[in-house]
Amino acid sequence: MSIAEIADIPADLAEEAARVPGIGVRLVSFLRAEIAQNQKRLRRHSQEARELVEQAKAEAEKLKASGITREQAMESFEKNYFDILKQL
Image (cartoon, rainbow, N blue to C red; front, top):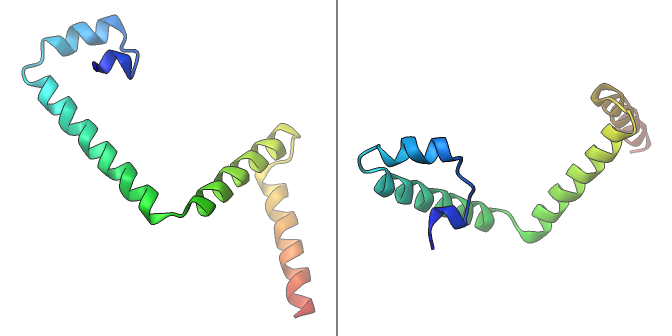
């Protein structure tokens, strides 16, 4: 498989890269490091945790799309948090 099958590389960038000595070796090394980092990340966080993060991202996008600012969301969170603390 070639790198072109993984990512679209603009023609001008590919031409410049082709003139760099040893770029292929460094590119393969970079890909190995990225794969190792991703595998480490996957081992560190459970599937459930990753799903929760994706759900939180989706909820944040919904809030953003509805016009609620980060500050408004934080105010609402703090109010709910302190209301819960009062009940403890």
